[in-house]
Image (cartoon, rainbow over the protein chains, first blue to last red):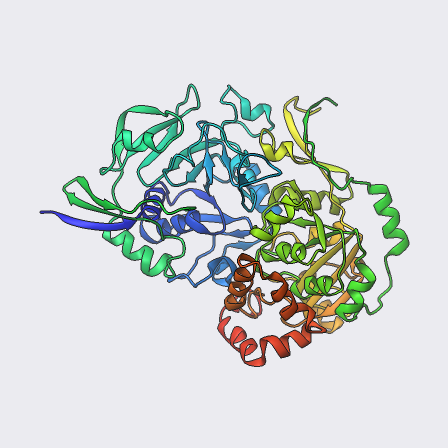
Length: 287
Length: 323
């Protein structure tokens, strides 16, 4: 019995990320985009007790779904929160060690999980493309115990050298590099999630390591979309493709305008635990 | 104290003593009405070359009408704190008002990219949290505060932060300089004529921004009776003596939202985004700023009562704000 399923690369990234989240943990998420959508999906489907804070000071809101359009500037985003505070207060809470996970998106990631959201291009003064800046990512990636990063599996995103390090991973990878830079100990990137892979970080070297693989992709497929060769775990876990339920909830309730979940289409044929790639769109320019 | 590393970014140097003297010599301590027009407030309290801090959360509760007045009066060589700001930085740069930006996060498109390439605007790197925290330091009257982020990154290198050995624990700790802007713009839900102000909802750092700055202009959706303020003093977030000007500005956050009152005008935000992408910011500014004499005139002639009524009606969530 086979069936086909069609989803976007971003839907896969969001579903995989949301499955990493638990109801008994506290999350600090970017105010919009894939991180917030992944958190909302987890909360809606398998972790209703999950609580998250946002850098505008909102603590543990209960967004009613379907999410209102333009959620980043809608009162629905902070609806029925446990507390409305301010940016400094929620940073203090992260600094005190309350926040288990930060959830963030990245433009570029390097082998130590450092990431860029400032610019790409040859030089600071002459960016090929300038982005908004770190926003709250620097403090979230520094202060939360663990960080989940979400990005697409593309060579230009997994780079040998970042054009600009906006936010810290394990810095140069040396022991205690984060502590020497003034960051709290025992913190750092935990998972990097793409449409075909999940990476963790090797404890000894703090280098990024392929940990799980989509059933329709190979290790070579993943490594082909990286500028550097990652470590590979001895046993790779399997990433489930988005379930029909996940896709239905994402599309109808969590991101009904489709602004965040859009991406390149992937169609797979499912048979038991295996999935065969039927077709996929080429990455869009600038995506 | 050993400095381990320091950033090379230019920053507004903290001077708590000069700040104290400014407050002593310039702030009105009596209960006097500060209500004035947006024109008078910006003309009197924003000078060319000022460091301007404004509080908003992207398109939430920003002092949009005051920003447009700054553009209308063609203020020049301003230095702004772009913490969690969306289109405002683009507008100010497009209008030639701003030549230095401390970046936390801002909307960046061709206007800012081209201005940076042409050398018309300089960017300095911080983060949203670091800018809010620098304003906290400013609001505490201290020259710097320690924090446990920024270190190790390129943001640190391009900022004015320093990494030192903490004299208490011996560990590395980052310091950031207090930020004491020349002028702050804060949009509030309610205040009285003296400036006692209420802000409802989750916020970025309106109080820190207000108290860290030498001059403070409030725009307010509503001017309420001072007796009403004194019946619920717990709700007062900014006290009157910090305030230099109170500008009555219903829909002052437009095209953004004031939660509990009106929704953001998404259509307008699309228009501004398209104007930037198509290189038509001049036309946008002409339509929304220069061709009207005031915020009120813009609301009447460019937005229209029907649209305003709709934005109000669509904001159905009142819980936590006005009930």
